[in-house]
Amino acid sequence: MRWESTSKGRWTYRLIPHLDCWLKRKHGQVNFHLTQILSGHGCFRNNLRRFGHEEADNCAHCQGQLEETAEHSVFSCVRFAGERDTLEARLGSTISVETFVPLMLMSEENWQAVSDFAAKVMTELRAEERRRNSEAT
Image 1 (cartoon, rainbow, N blue to C red):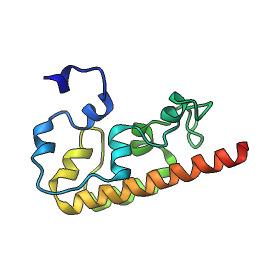
Image 2 (image 1 turned 180 degrees about the horizontal axis):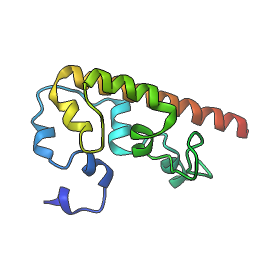
Image 3 (image 1 turned 45 degrees about the vertical axis):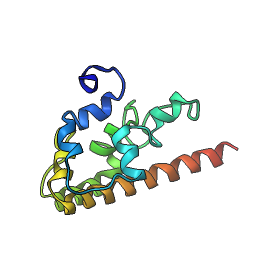
């Protein structure tokens, strides 16, 4: 009941609305990069800005004022289109907020595909953050 009613962790709740499927899974270890995506607490500019580590929270790679969030980075950012295409080919399905975790839970191979994708995305975001920080000093 608390999972459904709390105001915290809403991004994670959107990805994992039914905890029973997640908790009863037979495969898959959550690692550093997956945790960042599943929690939204990675090197996403909107998250970094919340803690005063960034002045802006917009995605530098997409047109307009799109906020760089976990959702944007995983599902729509142009900089990760190739990685997303590779992931979808490995999964045999298009990813969305609603399908991301269910696809992971379908098989060990799917879990590994998502984990590989997460590592690529988060490693690139971290590298970009480091570049911005070194340019600022």
